[in-house]
Image (cartoon, rainbow, N blue to C red):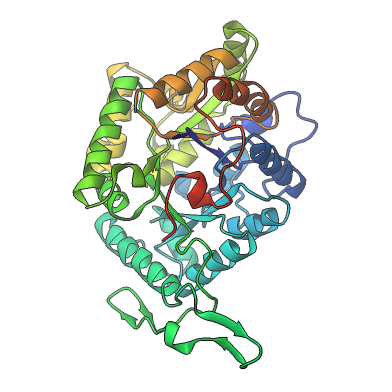
Length: 435
């Protein structure tokens, strides 16, 4: 039986801009607080989630006003290394998948293949990687590089994914012989050089750790551009999809993406579509709305604007908060992503301050009772608008606890989510064959 898929976005300070400020927290959590990371991962495993996921950013945002001061003042910008954390979590969990972000723009294929193979081995087949191209010039500067154009970043990303998978394939699955009597540890005929030599990478190989238990750890991609979608249709096992405002739009996106996957010669179900969801859960709709309003009131406009400045590569500090949102679409390189939101703001005659509040409340966030949120998840899944969701608790532990304890049992009662793991690997949880 096919099952809804659930991933937990591991963020100790909450996924809402103001989540770290939520009243009632005993203290402001640190992004690398391992006690809390461990607790979240173990609760997600007890709830039978497919995986936990850690995002990454390789710089502190500094486009707004040409400095990082406003970014670090008003939102959490620290990012612990995902694979250090995930390796530690592998030791305190048994079944749940463990995935983290890698930038194809700056990472080495050999080091990446080795890191993922190591995590897959020590977790007995539970590793995944989210391949991103990075969009920030600040990230490029931290690696002594210049940011490539959008199109060239995706060309490099495809070469990167191919290089990493070739390195995993440099060992056949049965290369390790372990024959003590004959003194043969590995069969050299089943290990090969990769000899990658192109405009992006030069890698001789072979990898110096044997083939991962899953063959290929699960490949995840996140984004919304047409170049991203084409790349994901060719290579990804999971897509962290851009959220859609309504069911009809989500169903159309889902159907078009699955058709694109089939045009690549793949089975439609070989790519799982998981948009984000920030659930705010309370006993009544009124109480849930009040919690959302609390977050909205705690939100600082510069938390949004410093983030948007880096995401859009546009310095929003040149505009006053109480002036109308300017028409800057023509100045943005990623128009297909940002023009709709800017057009909406201008159509509604929003000031920039109002725009920041709207951005903070829109898209991912759904406030309601456990029953209403479970019903929404079930409807979108059963109507083939999604294969599941990335659950992004807006604040921790209140919102995460509520989802684990109240929503998951309702999804299980509806028969759309597992009550026990049927597999031991992440590919197994996702219904994907070993490679």
